[in-house]
Amino acid sequence: MAYAREDRTGFTVTFRSLVLQAAKGPARKPAPMPRLRAAASVRGLPHGPLRARVTEAFTARPPNETERKVIAALLRHPGATSPVLSRQCGWLQPIWQTHFGLMCQRRAAWLWPAEAAGTPDARFLTGVLADYRPNLRTFSFKPEVAAALKALPVDWRI
Image (tube, rainbow, N blue to C red; front, side):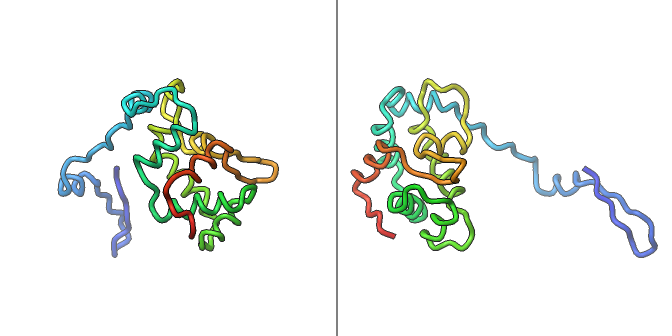
């Protein structure tokens, strides 16, 4: 990739980023994400019911503080919008939905059904746990997900 800038005399100077890359070493490609079907079957829940997959996901990878806030906000305020849920978490910007999607991505190998092909993105993963009503822009946990989360030995107070 070439970059151009104007020097003191008004001439355009062009240089390549290859010099910078050589100094840093060879560029590394990120490791490809493993197919979720293989990961889920290794975890032992290839076709398990949703409640069992949620329990396994949050037992194997307990929620961190931010994830506890995200879950607690939706458990306490089902049918709320992302800005409302964000305020419940103590955030000024409507970022709740982003944190919820990241939480789902971190547990994709457990949550995504093994029979679904390909690697899902965050939009589809959030649909595994929660229902979204686009006309009202509201979220609520699916009943079996809410029951599984409430049964976990986690303090959902924020």
